[in-house]
Image (cartoon, rainbow, N blue to C red; front, side, top):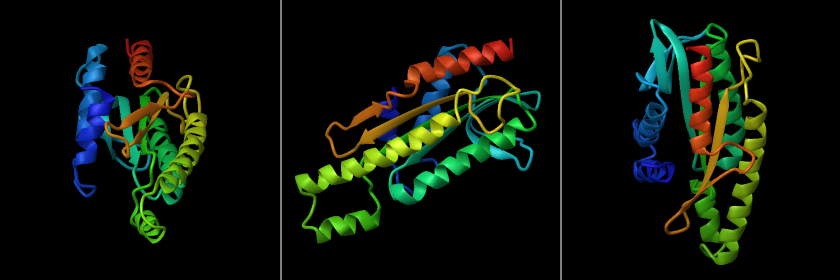
Length: 211
């Protein structure tokens, strides 16, 4: 299963499903295991400075988190969600790194190219439906918000070591999915790591810190 297939399974589930991220989480586990990282599990409780948080994918050895991956997505309400997602990202890493500065953290992000919120759909109906012109405008808006998020996320990535900023992640990979295509397209942002490079990087850093 590749990322595109994992995203397809994610998209098929109800937005309210508690296990909607499961296919993406399992995809991460398989990719890490290919690179020699065993004992990685989904929905892993990992202690932090302020609270214990359930990470999408984690590895804990003798009570110490050595690796964690946060899998996040934005399907609707791009304008309202992008700023909050960046704030959440910084808090996740800082909470864990404050106590476990050596933990290797990855951020795997996926965003729909077209906003699927109810407000967007209502506006589309008022404008006469999903015409080619309307679709192009929605794609342009989605591209703008994707670029804005990637710019912020990249500034909080590439953490160099335990002494680097606590709120940063060791590796980040951002993808955009255009669900208006059939089959839909998944595009990895050119300024970031591909999924393969993302998992390679996490495994490499983990071997260095936890030989």
